Image (cartoon, rainbow, N blue to C red; front, top):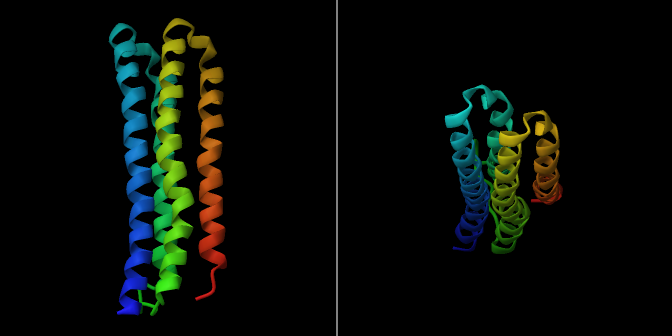
Length: 158
């Protein structure tokens, strides 16, 4: 029972990393894409400048996937499963939370920042790099969440 519960906790942590990162990315991309579609209805030539702003919040979904994948590798999901105690499963669960939560929140806020960037590009297309820089500043915190989760997962002794 203890080994099953530990394994379940580890898998739940991996699932949350992937799910929350994906939810945040979907919301963030949705915000930016709605604004970009409005701009493109007026000026389709701005597609190239807007594409990066729309796609940027999608990276958090990738980070969540990486965190989930590392947990699954750690527990041997692709080979022979490792028997985990309750506390080891709990450790892996919490090791996945920085990337899960950071990606959920930062992708949503990045989507809002990128939406504002889309609105700026609509009026001043030559300023698209400045809009992108602001979006990347939000990305930094998702990267920090990923790094903390990576360290916690990889350095954990099982």
